[in-house]
Image (cartoon, rainbow, N blue to C red; front, side):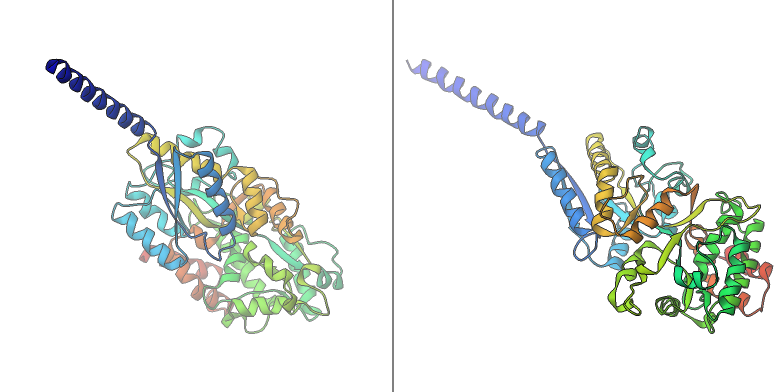
Length: 427
């Protein structure tokens, strides 16, 4: 009897061990993959509500297998500093975003970022705008950066001012546009807004449009030695004849102010400015800016290589840390594909006013100006990033001085480009 009790106790102990092992194995099989995402699209950011909705829905659909955890970051500069530090120390977050293209090459060189090349071999890559990924493939040949939030930069013009000088639609070519500029100036208006102070923002955007229209999609690959840069500078100098007095020392607020006051006929800026078209405080004689403006792509440069060019600015890239665990890598890809799915992008666009590098149908309830910005983007033959995002930082920093020298006739167009080349070569 005693031996039977010992045997029974031994059997029970073995059963407990087996049961615990089975439970442990089951627990291991159902281990949830946790994805850390330090995110700037939180708090008061316009994209925050939809970002939260997507994460909640994704986590619910993948409950028990994948969980995305948002680490809220509300200070843009603090976020940039944090991401830079984490990458350079080899501790990149699972998912994160970057908004400065001039840092991407250094980030890629660390070898700590996920390569999206294989994931993009299927249908996913086709959802991104043509050509938006290629400029950000660096020496390692990997695709470490997914262009995500964009900012198309078309021309916006005051239809009433154009009609006053005989134009019911925007000129189709640059030569015709310059003829219109002369008529606008003669009628007492500023044809366009220029500025050489601060970062020469408005002039930089005009120059970006000119370079793309003249030089085509490969102009930046050819370098500043491409003749398009000198030709574009010649036109930029001429545009200073048709802007407001004091433009050489003007800042962005001056350019914006003249357009809001209906003193300037043609304005250039990104989609982040759309809200200003609907502000009551910018109304004149009861009319919102949205009531008197229309939107167009750049005119055609006769004989140029860039017909149908649209200038864009990358606002954010999606990135991920290199993973040792294939299952976690697959989970990260699954989430990124989820948030970049075209129908969700349409909803995100409608809810936030933001624009994206993802092909999609504009939402029906978009504001009219937003629809027109989107139409310019969708109808583009190709897109080119702004001058500031396509050249080395040293060149971007030199641009205001070069524009000032050009506008003041201290240098000619070739001298303007020579200043930029010197900044590049001396960096």
